[in-house]
Length: 452
Image 1: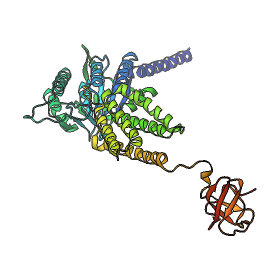
Image 2: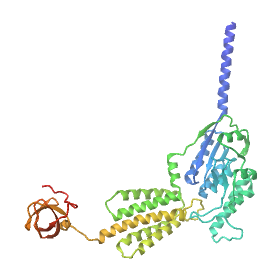
Image 3: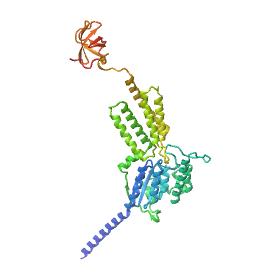
Image 4: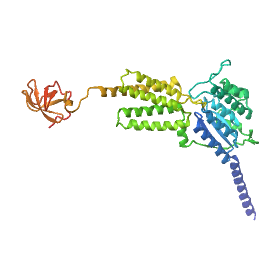
């Protein structure tokens, strides 16, 4: 009986241990992790909003956003901020790794997190709105804006930043200066000024520090219990990665220029097929990019006019004037193609990108123009005229008449001097069905078929 009691006690102990282990693992929960490494655009916005929705539905303890961005579209930033402020799950924004920055749109996102953290060697700020063509930036106190739309955008951006800072109880004064004065600071300054909540060396250090923190999520106070929590990474889908890659003015402009160049070569040399197919494919991809980026038809039309001028140069003797005007139109159109009222940090550098790309395009186009012009206006040869200069072989002695074999054919030939059979001869004239030849110095230009 004692043995039965001991056995039952042992079973009960093991069962309780297993239940405790199961309960402990169930209580640990999990956190979801995403990485934003690049511009803020519709693709990255959908990725982040989807991660918030997934974290709410799968019961995650928190969503960790590891952020490194130079900025992006204000409209996409607004969608992200709206999702973060209304999230029913704690959102932790961590500017990392070392050397990362939360510039412009990244500043909004960092401040909107329930917990904002930065790694050593990172920076935050410079949130002044700029136009998609690259204008804007820091404003001096006495400088009056001539662009009314940019002034309105700045005021709206300042109000937006102030509302976020107030909601998350962060330093409102600095948040406004980040927009108005393009203020930027390091992680230590941000912590000292109350812009962020903590500085963490890495993800593990971050989770250790935030464990046990009490934060307000919606109307409830939530205590973060992240001890032993499982980390689950939410990856971008393949399509989202594709659109995220296209959502860059640099990539979009390269696709436009490559597409135009491919079609240009195909139009000048019909039948090559490969340049035309690749050019059309690049333009299709550019069309996808223009569905994501702020886009102006006027800029594209100016670039098409430039392309037309480059083609016209072949048929009109302008001594390079039309070609030069075409290149200028490509430059002007390139500066206008993303010049929309949309406020964005996705700029297209003029000297650093646009000029080198257009210059490269102009060099290739100039080579094509030169080749096509020579083929159109150069001396044309066809039929028997192609025999001029060809080298063949005397098949009978020429004294002065005889037979020669050239271009796979036997011809009657006349020579101005006696030529022995087997010697190389060069065609100097075609006289009806007879050739006039002379002794060739060598077989440097032999006929393609001297057998027969």
